[in-house]
Image 1: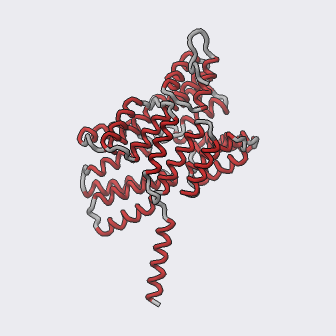
Image 2: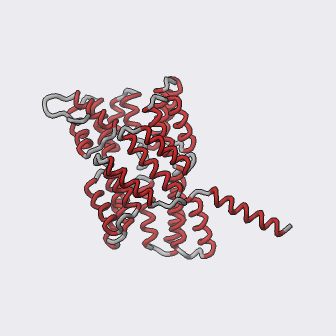
Image 3: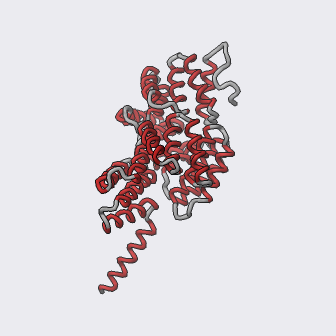
Length: 386
């Protein structure tokens, strides 16, 4: 009987390992290392990184708090250890503390000028703040120090997308997918989802759908893939299906920005009362986080501008986010708030700064055309945009 129980326990352990996600396996391995040697700082750093990865897998931000606790343990064991400093920057990025992440990454880069991932942090922080030249410089260093490394490829692909080179971005993402182990199912699903996003931007919704189906097979129920597949369904005018997909995503990741997308889809599906209720709940949730770094201010701006028809509130929210960063999507939201408030000359300057980066996002370009119609005389914002 004892031997049978041991065998059953082993089988259950194997089964759990088979169903666990890459992050869950990494968490378990780090916890085992800590149990064996609780005075090993690197094990706590590994646990913190695994918890941060689990946050991306699930879109559950409480994992960042757990990661912070693990990081504090690392620093108690070995104050100011380099692994903890790198992990700290990773967590700052995850929590959208981009300015703080940039300061910390620049400081670490001075003492570790040949560390590839520190340049990755510099890329991420600069890109989110709108410092695209600095982001590109950091990514070039990543690929110069270690040619073909996957983090460098995905970051370079994102910048190529922003600069309007969708083919170049797709090529880099394909290389990243080819270099990612099949065991890293969430990483592969994320890359496939980004590839689908690129194909959707290029107007190839059929290709995007195939990639997303592959992503959902690779990592079932993946919230990022559900969101992109909903965009495909909206392109196809299959609004009821988009609502179902976005409801699944919101059930899995109940964030304000996800609720906004669901409300928009409900409106497109002509479920007016449901959309009204969803928008009201979105506004409530979004206002609770509007002063935080990790917020839904872009969506809140568009809600006030396009749905609640409250230009003054749209401006207030847009200005708040514009004070924090000048990335292309913040420029777009700010420009749109200026436009609905009748400040088309100022709106033109902001949307021109956005489109000059090269972005081919349909919503941004639509705003550029609309703002151009509100200006006269000189060359309109987004001139030449098709």
